[in-house]
Length: 119
Image 1 (cartoon, helix red, strand yellow):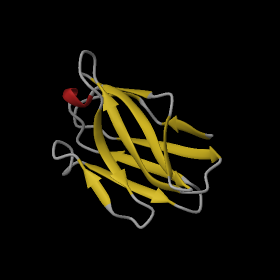
Image 2 (cartoon, rainbow, N blue to C red; image 1 turned 30 degrees about the vertical axis):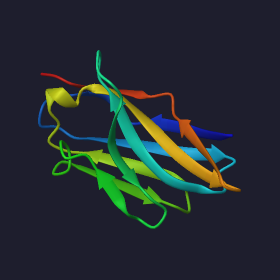
Image 3 (cartoon, rainbow, N blue to C red; image 1 turned 180 degrees about the vertical axis):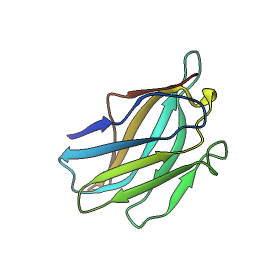
Image 4 (cartoon, helix red, strand yellow; image 1 turned 45 degrees about the vertical axis):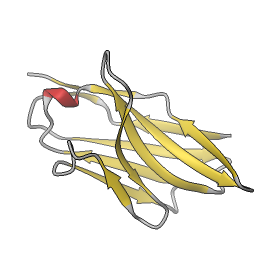
């Protein structure tokens, strides 16, 4: 099993910044991609940004100019720097990791961290 622990959520005013961090532990061998999803009330969970072990990223168009994802493979961690936050960014943000081991794919999720953008 892989455990993902997130930190860094909170309340911020529009235009502000937050940095989310996620650390993976446990059976981390074989983790390939890591990333962040979010789910707003009444909406489906959506990909915010993902990053592979090699550093290739996939960032949602809605945040591409404002959010940056980074990863530290040695620490098995992934961060999401969020700038110029908007009220519509309000959601629970989940860290996710995909592990490929012996041809078997497993997906893991963190417990989620609340991000609220409000004046």
